[in-house]
Amino acid sequence: MLHFNAEAFHGRPNPFHEGQCIRTTSAPTIPPPHPDPHVPSFKLPPKACDTHCHIFGPNERYPYVPERPYTPPDAPLEMFRALHNRLGVERAVIVNATPHGRDNRVVTDAIAQSNGRYKGVANVDETFSDQDLRRLADAGMTGCRFTFLPRLGKAPDMSSFDRIVERIAALDWHVDLYLPATLLPDFRPRLMALPVPYVLDHMGVVDAGLGLDQLAFVALLDLVRSDEKCWVKVTCPERISRAGSPFHDVAPFGKALIDAAPDRVLWGTDWPHPNVPVMPDDGDLVDLIPLYAPDPAVQHKLLVENPARLFRFAD
Image 1: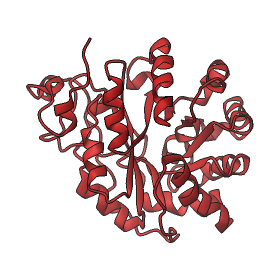
Image 2 (image 1 turned 120 degrees about the vertical axis):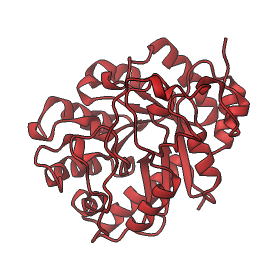
Image 3 (image 1 turned 90 degrees about the vertical axis):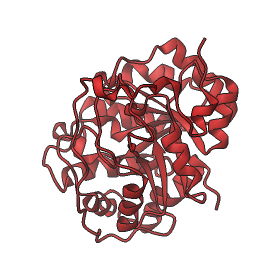
Image 4 (image 1 turned 180 degrees about the horizontal axis):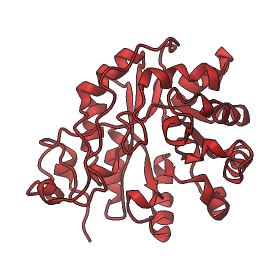
């Protein structure tokens, strides 16, 4: 059995990427993020956290895997910091995205340079030993992610999923799920039985054009209300909007989720926005926050208190 390579974890060459196979892949190249997002009108509070964002590359240092579903333009740490400085974001949770495969160095290296302001969500599989997982936890990872969207590759093997979740419970991790709400009726029993907290990405990627009464969103709201292990990210309005920028048609969905579980809802940008139907201005995403949560006390939960609790930031 293959195991995670400790040398790769510490930043030396990774045998899974030897030869820089990026040159031979047929993965389509996606657009870069908005080049000049506006300074938002809404002022974020101190310690506000972007709980879902990515760093891509640079490919020369953190190569993209040959089997990736898309090729992102480099969006390195320097761009990431500049974006957050403009928005007023002080903390971040960096989610390792599919182009980097199971090589988590792009995230752990950023965390190491953050002076405690960043945490991460890893990509792992059963080739990772318990020692490998412990190294990731020690480096600032607080969970691992599984995707259930066909465009991002085949769905996880659920027997493997169950075994990994059992193992991460010992680390006090959560599991992050890119799981469409349309699948929740089938997955609900499994989710309710999980031994760890779980986070549903991007409001379950529901279709805002179908309204608040659509079956998928009703199922999502019911799960959030029913299971105290269930968290949800009010992220990616550009994915679910049908009205387009500045995505105000999504505000009722975010507000409904926050009203349902104000202590278990998170906000984030999804910068640099891979595979979106329309590239958002990140200033617009910040300016949606008071539409999601008009009450300043609830805004503070969404942006500061909830992320600090789930991702274990030191306050």
